[in-house]
Image 1: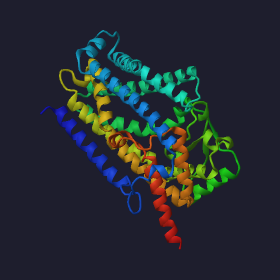
Image 2 (image 1 turned 90 degrees about the vertical axis):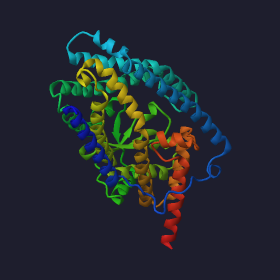
Image 3 (image 1 turned 120 degrees about the vertical axis):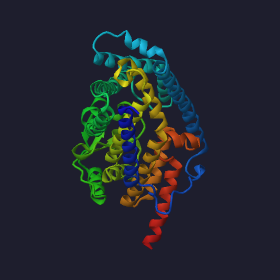
Image 4 (image 1 turned 180 degrees about the vertical axis):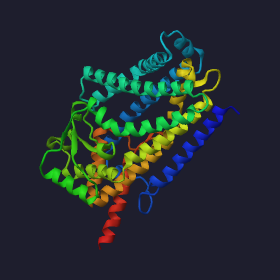
Length: 414
């Protein structure tokens, strides 16, 4: 066995072992006391017209998204698993690192152009349904920003891979795997500081009753909060959301401005339910958990890449860049069920903790109803699609959890 293959096997084994250990230790596999209940009956919480409207919108959006994914994989495969990509790179001028950067840009651009019609159709549906408020020029600018960020980060990672493979032909999988794992952690820390401001402006949640209640919730959940930020999301969307990003000194809890606006129609108890959910993520350092799992996955991925992208020259040959990107695209699809399954567990725990902090199951139920109505959510998605692509529990499962925990709270208070 070649020395680099031995190194690749060792790196893969270490990365997978680290991922499994981290997942066992950090992921809440049984977050709901008494177990996750069956989905709540849809008819008890939504009208027939609401159910039909959500299903109609989500079904069309799902097929467009699946089609876009299929086209992007076909483009990646044509460039990566045939001679077309290698021929393209061989015609590029400049030194090897310049060829790598240009190759990443060209492959990424080919994929974006091929899937652009689906993106446009998805946006048209969102506009027609009243889910988006962003003008087309601003939408185009965001697309360009997103492509620039994705291409820049990918180019940096691939240049690192190719450069190390050229310099350290035997040990490059170990060195590259360790460096990319470190970059995942650093990137998670820097993302809210460097990249989020490219797409939104953030202001502190103003002083007042809501801010006081948010800080009181943070005390209840044992979370140190220096500030809660409001993002100007209403210039882009009408849907409601909040999130937590970063960790350590870059950790931030962000709520959409249309969630806290007095004209949004959202009751204050629903806002507190959202914030309590995000504070629960911060309390458990879920972003750090995801980053550590991502770092272990990156380590294992580099080892697998070294095993699969063999042949003459291997990863060290810039002409193999399209193949590296194609393998990455396939890998991201294949690991989606694992990634989203873990995400659902973390989201479920955040719901449970939020309910314990607020003591208001009705508020959480009302929140889920409002979120589903405003986003035209499909309340009964195909089971396989939810398993593969669903990053959150379904609306009806979250409502059922709130009802179950509410009943438990009632019994314990008697």
